[in-house]
Amino acid sequence: MNMIHHLLLVIIIVFHITIFKFASARVPLTACRSYCGNLTIDYPFALRQGCGHAGFRDLLFCVNGVLMMHIPSGSYRILDIDYAYHGITLHDPAMSDCYTLDRSPKGRGNGFVVEPWRAVYLQPDRDNIFMLLGCRSGSPLFQGFPNKHLPCRSNVSGMSCDDYYRCPAWDGAGIRSSAYGNSNPPECCAVEPAAVRSINISHLQCEGYSSAYSVAPLRPPGPGAWTYGLRLSFSLPENNDGFCGACRSTGGVCGYDQDTHDDVCICGDWNSTSNCDSLGLTAMAPRTELPGFLATLAACGFSFLARWMFKF
Image (cartoon, rainbow, N blue to C red; front, side, top):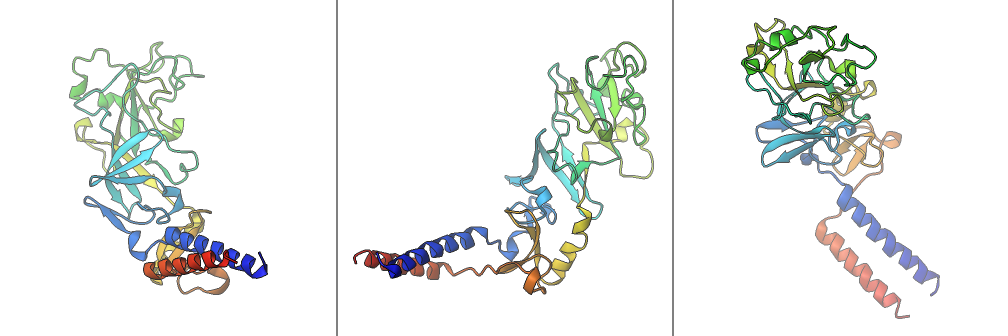
């Protein structure tokens, strides 16, 4: 095979790789903002790879019109996304509330655990209280604090276990003690997520949990008026400040590079590391997508050329 044959073979290989790359990597401008049921999915979230911020990749899924969040502790239904105040409200069907205690010796409910790398982007809101139920004396909650139960706070954001014991769910449930310092652990232990880093029900050796949050400046009048569920806060790193706004103001869509996870501004057939008005050193290599029929025609042409070439 002479030098021309070698050159043509290289061209064919490069052409096919390029066509495949463009077909699989290109993210249309209209694909990133979407809906699931009555919820809008917008930056920094997305349902499609390459859209949104990389810190929230592989997180949300739309299942039969229901928006779900999947993290290591389980799958949760998303009830609301508040983009103005950076909040997300989740529902865990196995969680106790004011009218039902859902407990099991093996632990009931998901709690809340995220991947270590994602924790800087997503965490429980500071006004969210976790009330852990029926935790064993050997629980990591109490290690290092014998007979004191120091991690159990009496009050978190105006809500406490003492208040929670007034719920109808506790009628007939037996002893309701939050007396810290007794030899037996209290039936309810109120904690802030920051105190234990993550709420892993089985790891903490608890039988279940309840979670409530407050978004109003006034304290709720009683546990029957609390809002039960998981309230999360999401945030972006400081170096992302203003990136998406600058991208959108120039007609782009905010996304990320699927290989490096760096921020990119999707500008139609090419991506920029800043905005769609920036060219030169700040712009990534353009991604011009060939029309489907043209790509097919060209591929057939090169295949025919290859067969002809190897006859000689």
